[in-house]
Length: 148
Image 1 (cartoon, rainbow, N blue to C red):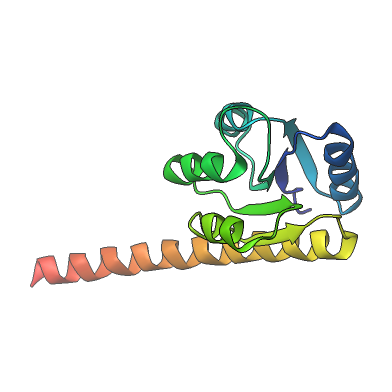
Image 2 (cartoon, rainbow, N blue to C red; image 1 turned 120 degrees about the vertical axis):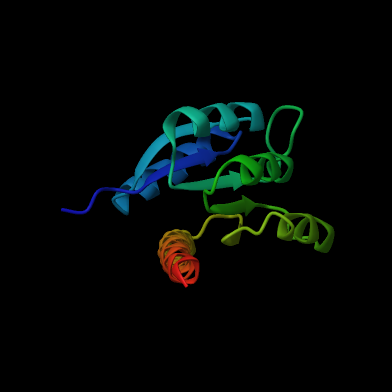
């Protein structure tokens, strides 16, 4: 039996966070926590090790979602989907730097959420398999070259 993917929701609007959590649970995902600030999100990532983060760009605290994502990208290899009401060019340009796996504009659409989550998890797993395969290949080549 396949285990449920663990997802962290970072959203400072409690009603929206609960709606996202409910929908993700309906899709058979495990919402490990709901954070309302970047600081809280970083803490949850270090203790709960989610497989995906869904993050609003405008959240409570000193850091917005993009700044939080930059920090998490430096220390973790977790795919991230932005969820925001802001789709202006400047925000999108800032968000692109963090290489998100998706960008969903509010109001939340259930089909869009589900497809973004499934694609992000699939893409991340595929990239991990490719990196692992490349590392094995590199080790074999290094061993063969070292024995010549």
